[in-house]
Amino acid sequence: MILKEKIRELRARFDGELAKAGTPEALEALRVAFLGKKGPVTDLMAELRNVEQSEKAEAGQLINTLKNELSEAIVKTGEALRAAALAAEIRRQKKYNPTLPARDAAGSYHPITLVQRELEEIFSSMGFTIEDYPEIVDDYHCFEALNIPKHHPARDMQDTYYIENGQLLKTHTSAAQNYIMKKYGAPLRAIFPGRCFRNEAIDACHENTFFQMEGIMIDENISISNLIYFMKTMLSEVFRRDIKVRLRPGFFPFVEPGFELDINCLICGGKGCPSCKNSGWLELCPCGMIHPNVLKAGGIDVDRYTGFAFGLGLTRLAMMKFGVKDIRDFNGGSLSALSQFVSE
Ligand code: FA5
Image 1: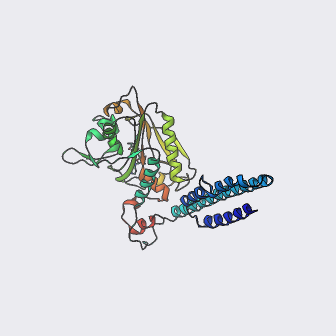
Image 2 (image 1 turned 45 degrees about the vertical axis):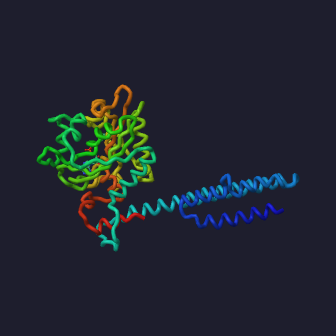
Image 3 (image 1 turned 180 degrees about the vertical axis):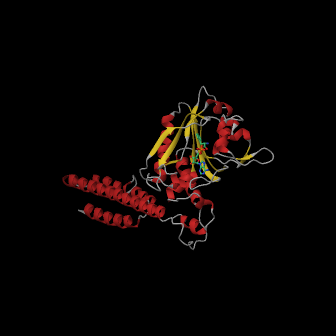
């Protein structure tokens, strides 16, 4: 039967191509090429018309078996590729060792840039735009527009560096919220990464210069469930494994209700170490529902819209992702430390 010959030939061709498909994209292209509407398997189905009535049932079964085998092989190879990628990622995450000599690398991205780009991809795929905002801001944007009037005690937590004209180095990426609300109005989905500055007592998890990534989503009927969904999706994409998180009430004048989202310290596995101030947990991403006063200041109709905001500690996320025990390694400018984060 000539059909059997064709099936054998097709299977051999498929196996050859499958062996060469080394990426999920190549695998998908292979699936479309062989099993898609215009592929050879569909052609074989069409050829069934010309097969003798007495042989039709057997021929149909052969084609179905071929189709199932090709689909299964694609799924299995996909799983193997994903497992290999995960193993490479874990190897990459584990190999950070600040005592190693510098790699012979012409240059590499800073680990915070790597994490930032990864997050930008995750949030862009969920419809968020990526915004930029200056590092030197005025008091209104950094505090007043965020429901933090002059002399509010919340300012004590964010002491910063002032310049003579009254402007200041921004203490948090929330400083861009008002500007972005006014720029786009509602509905709105945006993230804005940025460098922040605070007058801090520096230790293993506090720097005077660090990165955050803010996110806001404003629309009709936005609730805490939306907030939790986006936080969970983001963390599972970044870590690609199960990590323990906890959500507890937190106070920020610009959200109501407000939460602290902590992750189980991945440096010590939750036992307690200097990186998590011996608590086993690391404050990573405060968040909450945007306070109506903040929405109003941004020109948003509070009778129609609600929204959530989060302020992710990008530098701390990079610590957890790459297993960096001391935040000071990021700003130290040591080539031996930084050259280990070459993206693969
Ligand atoms: C804020 O900065 C709020 N603007 C976050 C926010 C946004 C809350 C939107 C609600 C809604 P906080 O001061 O806790 O909150 O800082 C946020 C995160 O930045 C912290 O969880 C931590 O991961 C990181 N962070 C803060 N201070 C430092 C520091 N000195 N060094 C390194 N990371 C820091």
